[in-house]
Image (cartoon, rainbow, N blue to C red; front, side, top):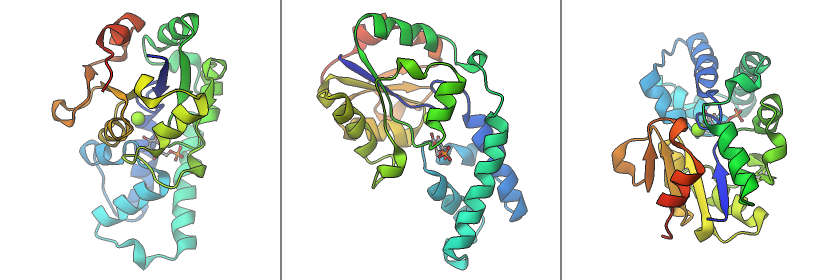
Length: 219
Ligand code: BG6
Ligand code: MG
């Protein structure tokens, strides 16, 4: 294992709840009601694709809207979301993440961010962990989102590490599929049993460097 590629929302910090709040609010302006269960289908999914899934769920085809209207709705959600994350501090790092980053760095293991979120760099700075990252993938430059492997393969390429030597950590089904499709070792946080993650943990407290090393295997 020469590199660890992290998802952000739901792995490093619990911003998944803020995404949900902001989407719920936007959906209610369209008289669409979404719940936590539906929200699982939005995890790891880009902003615009999430909006389209919500509209479809509410029985409103996205073809009923102009692309300008879609952009405005996505922007509205992002403005709400930005307000919710404005005050994030290092206290909102999920347990064990700070220790894991420190241990990886001390062993010379490369660290990258493979998040679909365009707010990723801002959140890393707020959490005061940006300096741990050797590389951050810019999701705006990708052609395909998770579950396509592009984001994890791009992270490995940016680090100059063979995908086989990489572990990816994810909390979403789409994210685990993306890691597996990239031919990497897939670590799932709170993910269902049947989606093929190589190593599953219930909580980030279990994400120690020793646990990663002892479970890591080449695919
Ligand atoms: C992912 C989240 O990390 O980023 C999704 O799991 C979110 O819920 C996506 O939609 C895009 O985030 P942003 O911050 O660019 O709207
Ligand atoms: Mg996530």
